[in-house]
Image 1: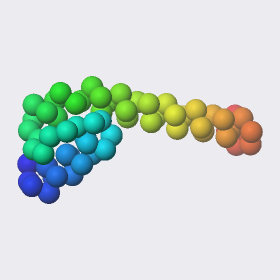
Image 2: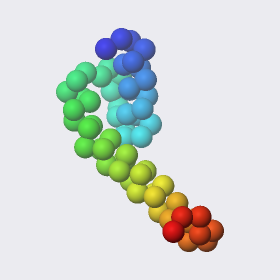
Image 3: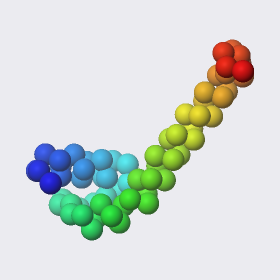
Amino acid sequence: MRDEEKQLTIEYLEKYHGFDKLEVDMNDIIQYLPKIYKKIYENIEYNLEEIISINSMTKIFD
């Protein structure tokens, strides 16, 4: 992984998942995959709920 990619990965893990290391390796990324997938799932679920809510008010989709 390039240094720039590592830094972006560390910043993401720190911001969204409480990662507290200054370096990252594949073992760290693998350890955080369940948390990352859970966050992605929750974001998708939230957005779908918002779309359904908006649609129920506006009836754009049947």
